[in-house]
Image (cartoon, rainbow, N blue to C red; front, top):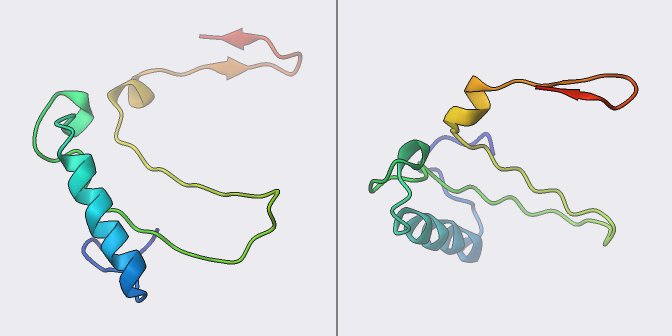
Length: 82
């Protein structure tokens, strides 16, 4: 996930999947910040590792106006304050 934009996975099958997913994501028309447009994602990076079936880590970094404009506080007793 820390590879530079345009840097593909060394495995050719995974590199093709990265390219295919990027094209499909950008074809959705969602665009930057969900306002429509041709570029929804700048890149897709896939890393592969052996794992235990009980764990399946996924990381997604999104540019979302709502995430930058809202905050919440979760208190020790579980109360959520917007």
